[in-house]
Amino acid sequence: MSILADLTSALDLAFNHAKYETVLELAPKLILELSKHDLLTPSKTSKVNENDLKVARKIIEVICQSSLLTTPADLESFSKYISLIKPLSENIDLLWLHLISLLAKGDFIQHQQLSSYYNTILPDFESSKYATFGKNLDIYLNEGNYGGVLKSFQNDNTLDKYITSFKSGFLELCRNEIGDNIQSSYKNGLKLGAARTLLYFETDLEVVEFSNQRDWEVDTEGLIIFDNINKNDIFDDEEKPEDVIDPIVIVNSYARELENIV
Image: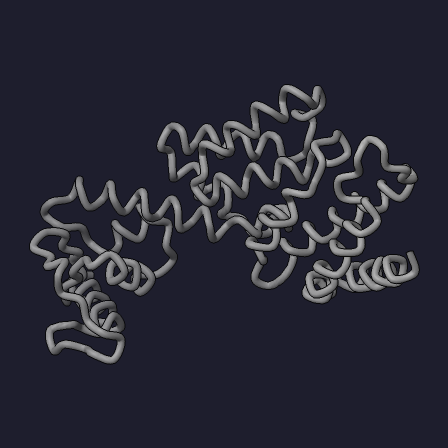
């Protein structure tokens, strides 16, 4: 097992020095070596040392943790390697992070199936430090309380470093849902400032960019118009029709109008 031992030492060194990208570079080689030694899914007749199995589980745990700590988080790798984690009491925190990741992707069916399964086979599953956070997110999403979800991620200073990895996914999911509701509710248009509050953006420019992604029209007075949108008008990246107004121009014009009002 000299190759596996060397790779494990390199893994520990990289993880302890926060070289998470290096950990992910080592991951495929480690998984291959673990498989060669029957340490991933040992058969009943396999003569595998229990301590070696614990080491193997720790290796996969470190790989999963590292995938969430890269900048940005490598959620694709997390999704791939988390499938190798055994549903054991020692792994309940990672299992809860997996459930939260499924919510962030909008995969509610698999989330429900795995949640029921883990609760059935692990009596202490609810004791994870992520259990309350994960359950609250599930409740908010089921209720359509997207504001509650977004508020859960508002304070970066208090967010767990692993939970932070899923923030962008939840923001995108919730803003798209809120955007659908806005579009169907405000037939006469909506001011940028109001949309900024509803969508939990910090600046009007972010709202304009979000509006452009959804083919909403934003006029120079800062009004978002949802009707009379020609969905068939698709322009190439290099094309910029004359009637498309630069987002910064829109925001600056809107700001000047607010100053005049004041």
